[in-house]
Image (cartoon, rainbow, N blue to C red; front, side, top):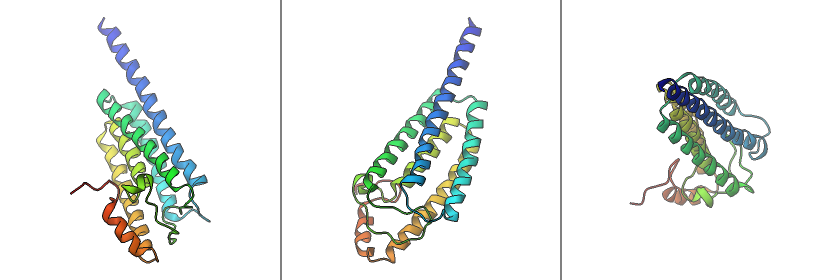
Length: 194
């Protein structure tokens, strides 16, 4: 009977590893789609290439960790839930910015407008938040301390990108309106009511 339970537990673990990996790759696939069809660029900026390289390395690491370690059921379910939230936030940000013709990350262009609808009503950088939630969710699902390293690198890169974009806005005709918007909407997370 113990062998049956052991076999069932490992079968469930393997099945959940597959589900976590497929959901993770689906969400990342959404991000790749946006790079091709949603964001505007004449060329892929070096910063976007760095993010892509770090992302590919992180995907390989996380798949390795997912299938070579045993994760607690709670960690995998929590990671999946966070990834689903990341996907929903990403879709909401796509819908809210459909007509805006947003530039690629690290493009360095002045924005044409300030988005304030959908998730932009609460978060100034919902795309970066969705990316961070995705990577953090998958890291939690792997339940490996080493998974924190690429997530920390990506937090640094996305924060640098967002700060650069905010500097571009501060140097544009939208600076005054954006200053008001910054007081209402959080950077990567919604502002808490005070």
